[in-house]
Every structure is written in structure tokens, then in C-alpha cells.
Length: 272
Image (cartoon, rainbow, N blue to C red):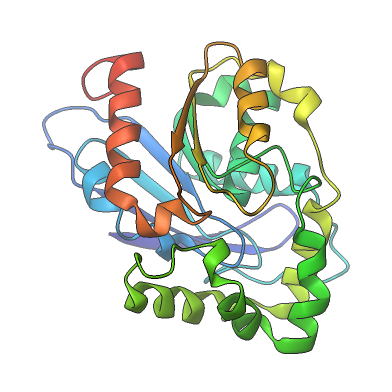
């Protein structure tokens, strides 16, 4: 693993890591993994071994998350800026075109890349990622987080994210600890911003191969949103994980990896 940072054009330090376990005698495509809100690239730890044998895996921490800098309030927070962060990382790494895996909020950015910068995206795989948060109850989280604290709020609503009684309780505890590290003021800005965003009317412009993986018991938003995405993104594939909660990448990592690899095999052949 290689860990590094770069500074964006508006002066924010972004952390990222690169892992490459592919055979050294053959070329390998790059797979960019974009994590969810209240998380960081570490949340993908259990998916990297399976993906890293086939792809060079790049995992950035979004601004305000993980080891990346929390931007000052004077800097605007927009989907365009978050997308630009990714484009600038690709420029630093001299990457022309990549496969993208996006989980939840990371999937919003993956969609923005495919819509507005199609020449940079080979494929997208979206996990629990709708076109923004405007048709969810996310805005109602903020007063509860402010009153109770992030960890306590997530603990009280943990069944929205994990199937209690099925998911390893040690994983749930680790998730709570990781999520609680998120800067509270920035999270308020981040969730508040995405709660007002809906770009469903734009996703018909996605032309690259697209995999949509939806939690079948999605409590954050509506499951029919994923079906509508499938209708609007030509040639997309839709998979429902029956009875699954929102955090499928956290507690079903092997299934997620298998579906990514099978999707890319179908669309691009061996080794994508």
C-alpha cells in the first residue's frame, strides 16, 4: 500500500492510498473507490483484497473525512467541487480513464463523473447510491445528531444500516467508532447540502456500463428510486440484495466484490 496526499486547486489537502496486488507482468486497469458520508477509505478495507488482485485500487478520503483536511466554511461545498477533487486526483496520478465504485455519497460523485466527464469513466458500480438525498429523511438526522451526538444517534438507528442480529456486533461497534470521528460541523454542512440535491433528471446522460446495487430493505429513501435509475440509465444492470439494510459494503463485502467482478467480466472480459 502507498499512502499519500495532494492539495486541491482550492487549497484542501486530500489523502489517498493505492493498492496493487495484480500480476506485475501484465497491465491492469485502475479501480477508484469512493466512500460514503460519515466514513473514509478505511470502510472499504474488506473489499480491497478481492479487487486488488485484478485492479490497481485507488481510495481517496473525501474532503472533510478520514485523513483529508476539513475545509474552512469559507469554501463552497458543492457536487461540482467534490467532483473536481476526484478529477484533480486523477490528474496527479496521470490516470486517463478509470472504473469507479461508489458507496452511498461516494456514488453521488461517481454519477456526477459519469454524467459530466464521461471521457474519464470506464464504468460505474453504485452501492446504495441514489441521485442525491432529497427524497430521503436525511435532513431529519441533523437536529438529532446535534442533540445526542453522532455516535449515539447512529447507535439508536443502527437497524437502518445493519441487520441487527445478523451483522457481527464487533463490526457494528467498529463502524460506530469510525463514523464518530467525522467532524460534526462539516457533517452538518455535508448532509445538509446533499439533502437538497436531486439530479435524477440528469442520469440519462450516463452512457458507460453501470451496475446499480440496491438494499432490498432500504430504510434511507425508497427502493423504487433504484428501479427508476435503472429505467433512466440505458443498459444499466440492477441488483437488489433482498432484506438488506443500507450499509451493504460494510457487512456484505464479499458479495459486493463478487458482483463487481462479475459485472466487469460481462462488460469488458477478463481482467476488465
